[in-house]
Length: 332
Ligand code: NAD
Ligand code: TDX
Image 1 (tube, helix red, strand yellow):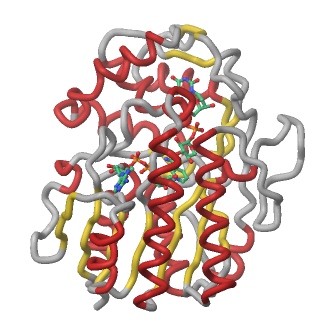
Image 2 (tube, helix red, strand yellow):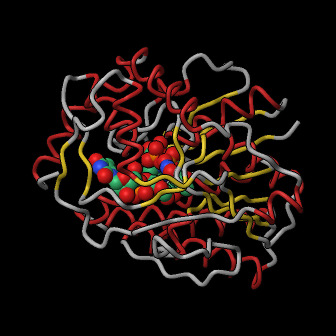
């Protein structure tokens, strides 16, 4: 049994990770989460209290982080400011949390010689042309576009430097776009589902040709566990499940699955600097670590996700009006 410190465990992917760990291991988990607008303790509801503990606090708080890291065997770092559109409005919390917060965690795992796994994104590699046969691999050069992705790229580089300079026992993973339960309504798929539930229309940025490589959150988390178990220290693994779709197709599928006309959506102001296409080649993860995704049917996974938002309105409702007001102010 290991004692695991999960940062950002009250957010979307982190909370699904905690649930996955409880169901698939006998580890004990401490969640360290600031409970920003994106974190919600109800997301950890129903988990056994003798195995999951929540500490509200900031990863940039060096003293708090030091004390917590010293009492655990492993740190899995999900906490981040995670939304590109927010980073265009106000980059400052992105710099503090994604860069300074990661720095404090690295200093603590260095001092206490703990194992560390760093969660990152495919956005650090920039974007691809629509017709480019290439996909991102572990050796693709970093070329981030937004304040969000540049702070994630910077945090990855800090980890690599702490491995090389100080021998920190760290692994890194860069994953493509996740979908599934407990995703904040500011993100693309939950925003459109909840708009339709509210009798409104999905909002597509620009022409909707941008491509994202969708993966179910449980597949992301099974890969993270596999990397923690079998990955080599200092190495990076890309996580993806061959799920490329353009945004227009995803909106049309949501409308169809929710019994609406497939053209009942609006085109709105495009995102500044909008990355065109992300695509992951996860060959290394599959061949070296024997990982495979379980959710290969996007239509079925999306239908389950729609059903989850329909059944869990009380979870997302408190965030919806505020989120839509922010989008409306930006013409989106
Ligand atoms: P999220 O916004 O849903 O959750 C982030 C969590 O971090 C929240 O609970 C928030 O309260 C917490 N947090 C924020 N600042 C903090 C701080 N200073 N101290 C402590 N806690 C803080 O994000 P998510 O979508 O679950 O993303 C989790 C991680 O996965 C991030 O590192 C993100 O970059 C990465 N990632 C996300 C995706 C995706 O599709 N969502 C894809 C690849 C990688
Ligand atoms: O209303 C919308 N309409 C729309 O067309 C929203 C919110 C988004 N979009 C587009 C923008 C993107 O092309 O949909 C696509 C997905 O948008 P987001 O959900 O904001 O995700 P993205 O910017 O691709 O970043 C996500 O994946 C990588 C996560 O938010 C990041 O945390 C992760 O690193």
